[in-house]
Image (cartoon, rainbow, N blue to C red; front, top):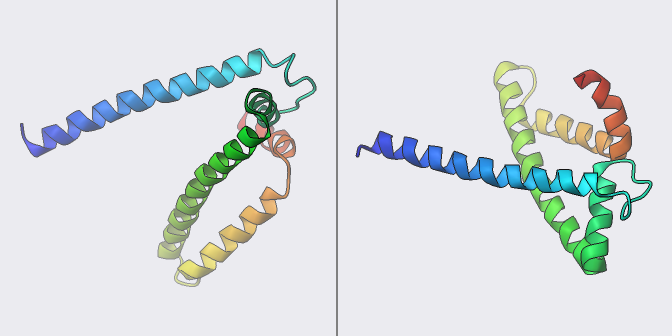
Amino acid sequence: MTKTKDIVKYTISAGFVSVILLASLYFSLFYLGATSAAVAEGATNGGQIFSRYVNVLFGSAGTWIMAGIIVLASLTTLVGVTSASADYFAKFSSRFSYPFWIALFTAMTITVSQYGLTDLLRITIPALL
């Protein structure tokens, strides 16, 4: 096989595995949401449902571990999106540099992060529909 064929083969294989794993994850989250009446009564968003499930199943230690996992996963996305966006805008703007865009996007992120998930969903869902 040629190198190109190997790349295509492994990319398709990795994509297939990713689809299976992500589908399993989302079906699990769907199940948690559908069966949450007893565990997460009064929850207003999926984050609260998930947090209560983890607390019931794994206790306080499990809640802290899951919080750490979520923070690390979110941080990698935050760094990637912020740096890619800053790089993109810096290329098309001779007036503002990469550090400026990093500072701007970081300030915007900090501002948006002050709202709770329920408020963010209330604001963004109408725009998505």
